[in-house]
Amino acid sequence: MVQTIFEFLNNLGFTHPLHPALTHIPMGMVMGAVTFRLASFLPKLKFLAKTGYHCVILGLLGIAPTAFAGYLDWQHTFGGEWEFLIILKIILAVVLTIVLVTIAVIDDPENPKFDKKTFFYLLTVLLAIGLGFSGGELQYG
Image 1 (cartoon, rainbow, N blue to C red):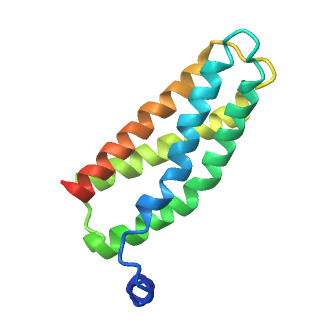
Image 2 (cartoon, rainbow, N blue to C red; image 1 turned 90 degrees about the vertical axis):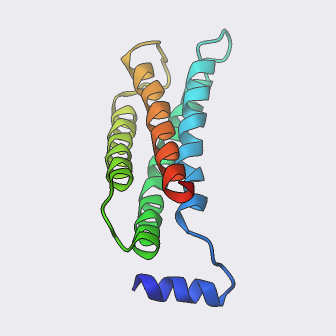
Image 3 (cartoon, rainbow, N blue to C red; image 1 turned 180 degrees about the horizontal axis):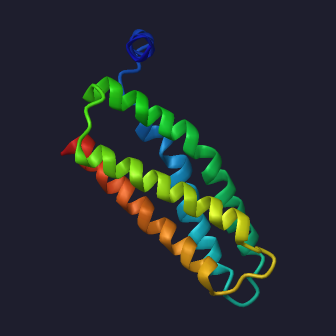
């Protein structure tokens, strides 16, 4: 199946990996969520907490297609070979998903406070950095 997908895309002239393009959805939403959350603590910008929360929800929606594309690229490029960076990316992606779901469940964007919820937002950035770094190492060595 994987080979068929990549052959089809190659016939269309698309020879790039699929995963990197899709990573911008959840990673961009994570960065946006944190930026808007922190900005919501400035006077008169409390309303931005809701925007940050919406970024969390959109980031969650982007995880499944991004992970699926990562799986396809892993099978195509690395033959499904388990190596440290692949395992690390899977662990970080699962933890990021859990943290985003936690934020989606416990956050109250109408009343933002600098508390453990904000810590969870900040944690998502660290997880995104880890995912990006390990992905870059996999792709570019």
